[in-house]
Amino acid sequence: MSSITIDSNLHTGSLHQLMLTEIQSCKSAVLHWSCSAGHLVVHFLPILANGKPVSPWKLDEHSHTHFYQTPCCLCPFLDGSATYKRSKIGWVQFLAQTQTGDIYSDGKYVAACAEQRCGYFGMII
Ligand SMILES: [Zn+2]
Image 1 (spheres, rainbow, N blue to C red):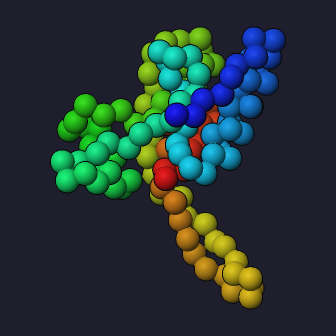
Image 2 (cartoon, rainbow, N blue to C red; image 1 turned 45 degrees about the horizontal axis):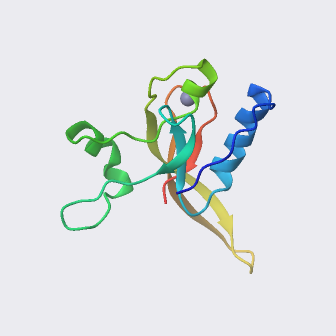
Image 3 (spheres, protein in one colour; image 1 turned 45 degrees about the vertical axis):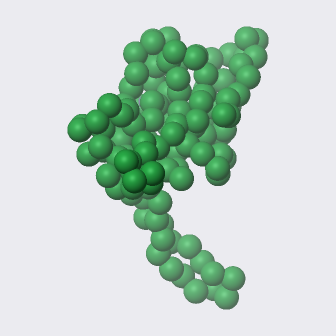
């Protein structure tokens, strides 16, 4: 399980930036804010009865029909609140370039702050 150690001497703004960097640079898991732990933790995708994780495009729907919460954004940290804040799951499309210069379209599922307030933006792995 991944988490970051919080230096109590860091200013809230610095810690916020540090966590955003950690979230966006993490390539092996989705990190999110844990209100109960008070730091970033790995967000685990729900597992279906067949042993496979729920597909990213079904996470939002799954959260309405099962006991599952999408990743928590950083708004509770900024507000000093212990109340979970639901992130929004969406598809981000971008253009990329091959080594030979060809341009192609690609995309990723992401979890982002539903209020576009705290900057939370994590790739769904
Ligand atoms: Zn937020």
